[in-house]
Image (tube, rainbow over all chains, first blue to last red):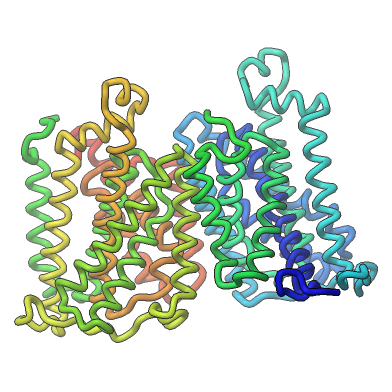
Length: 295
Length: 313
């Protein structure tokens, strides 16, 4: 096959796939942040730590109890989501009437605690997680060789993102959620238990982060820091997309992943910073974000 | 409050105590430890200028601290700049960086502001990781301390201590002056009610930007001094955990109080000193302090005292 812009197609598509995978995680994590922010008005700084907890919980289930990847995909979001529910019930709940900044500070503190505890227990070096047998090997797509697990990650995250979008935008439950985002006292007056909805929403957002962690475990090393740096990039993604729209979060997440992948091909030195540069440009041109509304 | 007048009596007394303590302390306590506290106290005070008096929570102040540390260290080591010029170069760099970052970040409010500053600081971190002159993972080591005004050698810890203490007091008074000037009153008006300040004819964005640049400049001063004192500028200085420490110190001491960040810096640095051998537990304890402060102790140490004596501190 001929080179594309002087780059061998294998390298180009390989990086595109990596970009898509990173984009999958950006999309799922920024989606969770956006849902939580919509209802709780809190930026969940613990999101990265909860993603890391997801990966570690899957690792512990596999290596200590022999529970497979497939069961982990079900169990882990529930376990970590419950942890989220506990945080919301015992701590976050008391901050809703205060300045938003306190929510940020509290979740930052929780992230420090969680990361510190995992580092104390498991050390800083990464732990490997075995790719499940059914997803080992790869497929020749004609224009590139695709490792099966990577294709699986992109597919699953697309399904998860679109399902979440569907539930929020097209179902009755989602309508309640959107209504409570706009005007909580009004929805409460219609007899819907808004505090419980808030709790469950936080739990769901956290569960989504944990689910991303399970997906990430076989690709990246499972380490206590895996979420900390990722979450800062996800914050930039959220600033670029604006948190007003669910589909906006998904599109921005995948889009930025692809752009980052392409940057790795054409100008590798900038690949770590390209998303931040894009954020700066978006702030100059469209301060509310690509899909954002000014509140 | 006396508005824009001089320092009220009880603050004068506290300031006098602080000066007296700084004069005596190095003969009792290890001067390098004291200098570390002073650098971080200045860092926290300058950070507090923004969060406490304008209500802007920056989560990226490490970029000014570390950026200035790198420039001052590079200036002193590679360009052979004298002490004063190295500090000045670091501080000026932070001021310029503050102008660029501030202009971007104030375009969004509240939580977005925090996320933007954090993201831009991460960009500076990656820049520092890759740029050739920062020494990568090793950082810039063995930075010469040089001579003050080309005459007095700063090799001696005690001599350097008094220079650092003088810089700290000057910067502290500058912050006090800024906060209590008419400019500072407008900042507080913006913090309390931005649309109202705008409708009164104040260009809120310009005030916010000016406060951001002032804060960045003073943080840069702290970072430059720190790199000369420890003869080291490293990636730790630009990492987001450093921003978190400034936030923590200010929160513990009391956001929006004049003396609070100093108290916070003393507490946190002392704690780090004692917990140093416990490794990851430092992070855990810091996290617990964060959570405890936010849930039960939002006014901070000095804030609580000020409330008890019903006077601003």
